Length: 119
Length: 112
Image 1 (tube, rainbow over the protein chains, first blue to last red):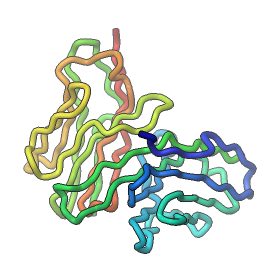
Image 2 (image 1 turned 120 degrees about the vertical axis):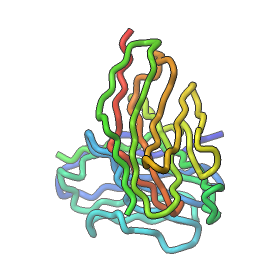
Image 3 (image 1 turned 135 degrees about the vertical axis):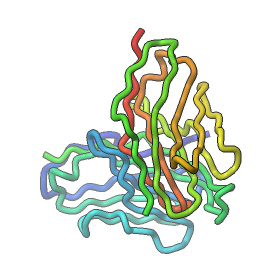
Image 4 (image 1 turned 60 degrees about the vertical axis):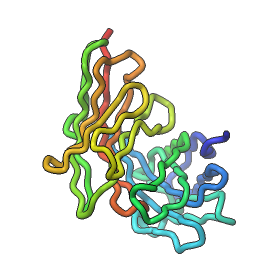
């Protein structure tokens, strides 16, 4: 079946402009995550959506970053007034419900990422 | 607080020789642990995961990892490296199921 898709695959923008990155999770997956991967770094957690619960925004690096998830499916990550340090690969992942049991903890399925370059 | 340390940023092995990628974690609870692989220009793919069942976990492509609580380690191994194993490998820890902490990655090079 279809995996997680992200668009655009590449985005070049000028400093100070706003960008929107899109994630289409696997159908039926209620959990959705955004990560940032900078060159030579591990993945940095940004935000987590689980069903209709309030999102966990604890990883967002500044108030220029925001994300929404409409209808429990597609998610958009918005970066306002982009800075050069925002240049990175932005990865989206989805998974089935977290049941509360570590035994049942579900696997994250990752999209191919959006490579953002801020000039 | 949870964290993951991948002790080697780069590992180079000859084709057909064993692979060892090291990972140590810290967690306040009984963690779940994962290894993901990222091939060039490809998405992250789960290799294997540990969720408090058997401590020796077998994954795809002949990889396995052993959870050692006393050493807080979850090293990834493979008996014989293949050229197609060349990639970036990430160790991941989670103890709540809704936040995952990634190591900085280990780049594996396989020499023909």
